[in-house]
Amino acid sequence: MNEIKFPIQECFYSIQGEGYFFGTPSYFIRFKGCHIRCNWCDTKQSWNIHNDDFISIKKIISNININSKIIILTGGEPMMWNLFPLIKILKKQGYRIHIETSGFYPINNIYIDWITISPKKNKVPLKKNYEKINELKIIISNETDFLFAEEQASYIKKKCVLFLQPEWNNKKKITPKIIHYIKNNPKWRISLQIHKILNIN
View 1 (cartoon, rainbow, N blue to C red):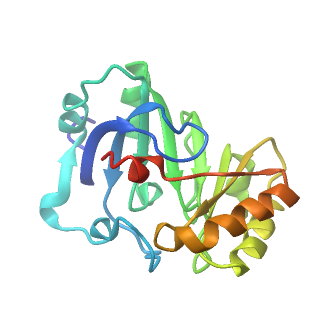
View 2: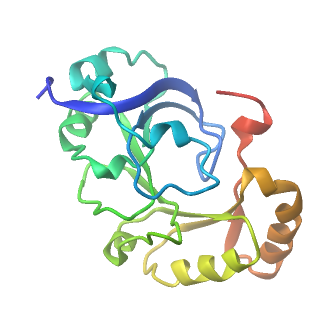
């Protein structure tokens, strides 16, 4: 199992800058590969996969040396891959596993502790994934995105935290509109990319 390999963009220990756990020290494992390819994506370098990007589970785990117990699997799109072998080992070592995904691929792993779906218009999440979600995070770049946010939220049938997050390159223009919207629709919260504001990797 330790010789199973995944395409990895980077692994690093930092502060979660977004969503419900913002400000929490966390270890990030960023997978390569993404077929969704949003034009405002801030990790476009993770889209394409090369042969030398693949790293064994043994090496991935051996590089983890942190005080926190939170490991965030992100991308790219981590759910493109069968993560069960990696997650199983991490759980045995006592880590809490968080996933950040578009929701376009099935989420089948019962060992995931926190699931954040950030839907994209061009490839919307599978409806069945909303049965498992803990956090919905909608990126807002223009006013039509509010309608998209409400549509996605309507699929949720369980307790879930709802976030609207300004698209970074348009944050000055759209953030006041998000604040106004949330004041009138208080089921939503605002998520800010604190790591970018503080210039933290």
